[in-house]
Image (cartoon, rainbow, N blue to C red; front, side, top):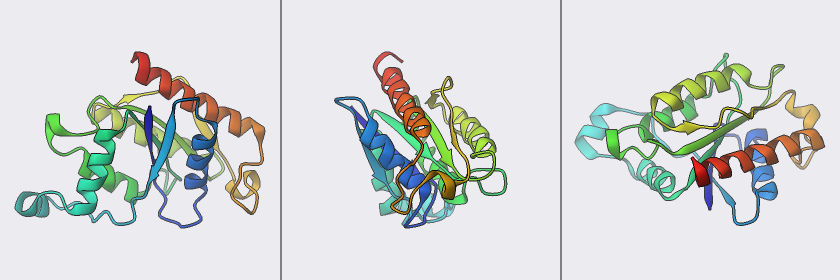
Length: 180
């Protein structure tokens, strides 16, 4: 089973990307989590889509989503919402109606940062993913606050509590993929 990890952060030393690496480490047997960066995704522009189609980085992302059994999205919270980079990638991926790789894909989300651990960002992300017709894990939420306090200098999660929450989230996503 292949889960595609998407980090809403473009930072090279991102806590959210680090959380996706934790997910890869604690995934159940037979489940892989592969992180796909968003750094090269251009801003969505209908004129480009209409005249050229999907730019290469977008086509690669859409294919990675289509090839995955599920998505695990990690995003920081910017101004009470998900990052612009993540929303932009979702906008590109949601195009194409029935050909959208987001349609019916099992999806889970988590987030690192802020006093409330990305609660508001995940609420917005959930709304967007439900509109794209993704099937979203809703019984387990992972909100990791104050990233500098929960990670060591090597970007490893220091709290077993959060490692266990990520492990449960990945297991719930695998369950949704298997029995959804």
